[in-house]
Image 1 (cartoon, one colour):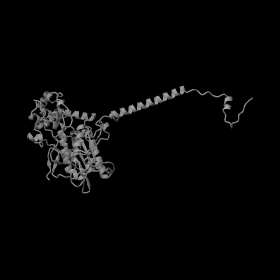
Image 2 (tube, rainbow, N blue to C red):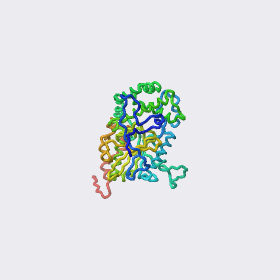
Image 3 (cartoon, one colour):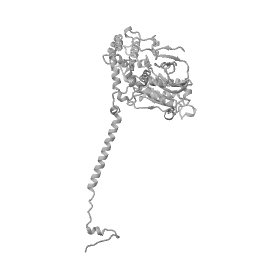
Image 4 (cartoon, rainbow, N blue to C red):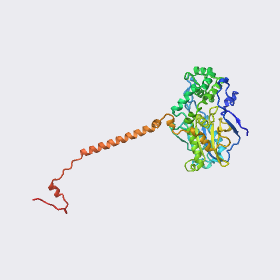
Length: 458
């Protein structure tokens, strides 16, 4: 199969507008800034290879409502999004159900017909849209068979989805407070490449700044605020319409500029270490445990599934050195497979990069020639794995989990209060207890046992 160099995450909208996603946007020569397009080979086989030993699946949630609103877009207020801001839609649940069916076609033989808690573990970020996406996806992956019907007409059986509190989830929540990562992102405003892109799109940025009502001046890194609302309105154009200051031509440029801005999200080693490194380190730990046999005791034997966000997919790929040119779309998936080939334990990474598309690409992992062995790749990427995420983020452990320390402080205070009450009670009891009168010598003799000698002085 011939290897081709392609820009991934092909958006259907681009194709409709005649935009070739494999080419950098049409910018002045001095302003063109695109990292080398990731190399990939399209896979036509529907099922995975029989050398598969373990599987990680990481997918983005389905279609959702906007997380934020544009100030100067009154017709698309919060009340017009019935599920609520940031929440998944029926369309998004359907997308995830179909993704689950696609995953079943590819991995059904490996995972088995029925869900097994011993073989599969599903973890979601702590957001409604990702938890519901996981449930819809699992319904597509594991439809109920006849013996599993439980007095319902639905072709569905409950499957557990686990989560970690979003304030502690530094693997899947890229929005978790990390001052050092925030500083690294802020620094891109002074990057010469960013300044060149902004100069090339100066007219567009000025137009969006004046019409939208968002922060001024509008910089490249703030393009998400514009893109998010307009993208959701586009996907729900049967019920929502763009404000008058947006048309197809402007929208095309907004998409291109947003994807360029997104490339800077994890563009240096520090951002990859703080935003993607912990997740990739966890994946490697599980793969190595599978290889040495310890996973058979403690963990799921066949697959670990993550339901997360576009930033999670992009951070994971970027940590492997694969930088997407179009930010991950709804219900797209990264597949990290462990294979035993010619006696070697190797990693293969696949990308299902378009919503509701059958297209699947095997990604070339930078630094790997031929078979990409687990230990060699681990050694190559180990410098991106944080040792103490909180400290490296500028959040000492003493303040990294406020809720936990508040609970500890309350418990300590309660113990002090209880001890104080006990001490006061003892003192009061001693004061109220009648004093014992010592018997006189004669009385002592009278109280002696019968067998004791009584010596009376007459």
